Amino acid sequence: MVTLSVSTSNRVESQDITHLISQEISSNNWDDGILTIYCPHTTGAITINESADPDVVKDMTMEMNNIVPFDDGYLHSEGNSAAHIKSSLIGCSETVIVENGNTVLGTWQGVYFAEFDGPRTRKVLLKFVNNK
Ligand code: ZN
Image (cartoon, helix red, strand yellow):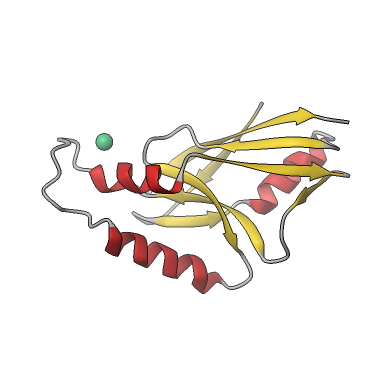
């Protein structure tokens, strides 16, 4: 298993981590198989979406904040219920196919780490299962 470190500078922010994943695939000689990308935090998430136009992820962040307001009479005393809810809406992992040492993603797709209770430095775990 490989642990990536991802640092954010905003309360809610998504970062394209596709290049970090590609670096690990290359340096670990992962050739053909399945790669799980997992966020072990209750207020972060992993998602795959458009990486060509950076406005897409900005719109997603803006709309997530509209759908799940920061304050809404939540019970959780830590004060970050909105972040927990957003984490579960997006989900904590994605699985990608690795073939010939490359991720198999659509032309416009990238893998994102989503922070909902930042800024923080977070772990993203990668587990590769060889299927050659
Ligand atoms: Zn909490």
